[in-house]
Length: 320
Ligand SMILES: Nc1ncnc2c1ncn2[C@@H]1O[C@H](COP(=O)(O)OP(=O)(O)OP(=O)(O)O)[C@@H](O)[C@H]1O
Ligand SMILES: [Mg+2]
Image 1 (cartoon, rainbow, N blue to C red):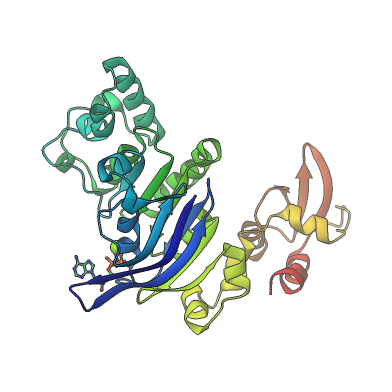
Image 2: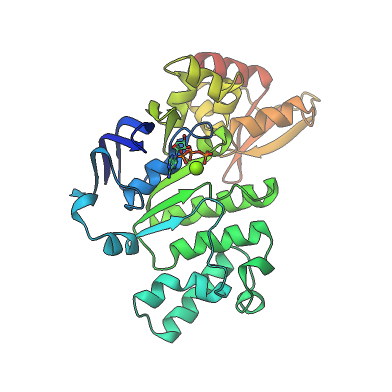
């Protein structure tokens, strides 16, 4: 869907912000750009919708080189969530969200319905916020408006530059989940910038790790956690990468790999979990001593029980 082919960006003749990167983004995937400040994430994003020119190489969307496309047309088909939200300060919230539909000449009813739908999606009351200006909203609220503004005309491609950066952890996690749920339905192709390895693992079908404008590794999250290609990536994903990768596996995976003991009345302190619980959550219940044994349930049926030992074995055999 989106192809980067030996793309380089040089600013002012000597600042190499992006250095010969090549990778393919399949349709319907979320690819997360991850890396330290100044490593070229925003610049890479902005070359896709031609807000920055490409110094060398090509970027194509759906087989068309972006340099051959009309920039205005291109930007209408690509939603862009700007880092630090970038709302138009002199426009109301409704005008901000409906900016692209306005350009596209949508009728009043269609715009109104869409505004309501999008505001509901991010948990903001449309009537309460419609007439306010961006400075009358909190940082987190502004960021949510920035996200739905980019989604307004339902573009097939979205560029999202640290879209959840200003949200507190609870709202952030909630919006991440909502966003993944919506994505299952809408299957957009998304380039998503993040500073946060946990967010990258959660959101990304693939993760691109940048350093000083170069691409260090481009892989699925569990591949990056299991096999970092070099020391930089290893340090960046952190010492607890084995634990992190537990969040990508569920109790179901473990059941498929190991035969578990029957849930028995051994007098152990037990707790029931569903089969789709991720292994990180399962482990945390066991470690916090909320239970010594987890009883696994699938569609009303108990299918076995597991202890810390089972998760340990799985970690060593499958993940490390
Ligand atoms: N318009 C510009 N003119 C000159 N240099 C620039 C320009 N924009 C970015 N740069 C430089 O290019 C490099 C990459 O910047 P970029 O904004 O892409 O980084 P980033 O990975 O998005 O960082 P952050 O995580 O802080 O947002 C930096 O060294 C930056 O100073
Ligand atoms: Mg940036």
